[in-house]
Length: 299
Ligand SMILES: Cc1cc2nc3c(=O)[nH]c(=O)nc-3n(C[C@H](O)[C@H](O)[C@H](O)COP(=O)(O)OP(=O)(O)OC[C@H]3O[C@@H](n4cnc5c(N)ncnc54)[C@H](O)[C@@H]3O)c2cc1C
Image 1 (cartoon, helix red, strand yellow):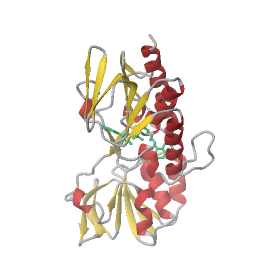
Image 2 (image 1 turned 90 degrees about the horizontal axis):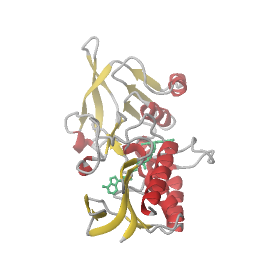
Image 3 (image 1 turned 45 degrees about the vertical axis):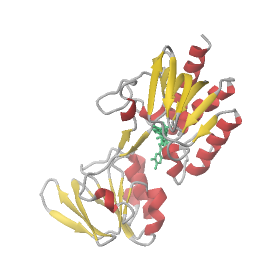
Image 4 (image 1 turned 30 degrees about the vertical axis):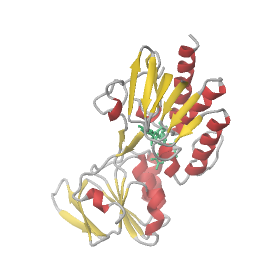
């Protein structure tokens, strides 16, 4: 039996592992995909205090190494289920594991756009991660879909590699930070396509163009692109745990800043309902969740 099982090896979960391990608790952490979560795919991090600039991958590895340094046992497998009986939690992955407390640090994954054949276009020009796949489109023309920080950051990143970037957004103004939008406006090879919806992507076998529809005029136009980058938001990875976690209408876990669902059950990071989802807020949550779990176990 472990003291604490952590589900999710992104910044929130790994921070919780560092705190719990350092306080002498036995910790088992599960990660279903890549250590570091979303940030492992980021080209560059410039806003985490203490690092002027670090790659997302290096940041992720540093977190994982630090968690292991403090004794966390790490298993790279997805958790399928969590059950509680008499204050003991059974966490099911390849087999069952028991603990006194569970920390959910599930994070989010990119939303799908819903265009025809979306799944089959992945790997044929469609990507959900500009920093992972942008280099495949060096010197070519691409489109980024979305209007938030990720979309504008992706467009900026791609504009340094690609010949031209269309930034397609369904509204006439961006939700992204003004400073980012200004930088994008200053780039000669970024063209804004506003008030426009993505209708389809034409591929044979790789993407050759996309069709967008202007919401105001109804006019459809074909943009010649080889790469299509989706940056239209995130879905929390909470669905498998709806019986143990209180979810809001978007699927985020509805808990306050104490990260506590009830004794023994804690939630941290981007999967929690909150305003700002960043590395600093994820690691802050990981700190709180671990500290609350430690307090509970210590009575
Ligand atoms: C491209 C990109 C660039 C970004 N750049 C920045 C930046 O520069 N600065 C900044 O502050 N923020 C940035 N962010 C946001 C930042 O990455 C997130 O806020 C942060 O990663 C959230 O951490 P998290 O641990 O809550 O969730 P995540 O990073 O999403 O990690 C959750 C982890 O849990 C795992 N998991 C989920 N369910 C299970 C399960 N059932 N079993 C096992 N494992 C599971 C997932 O595989 C995932 O690895 C960026 C995000 C993206 C996508």
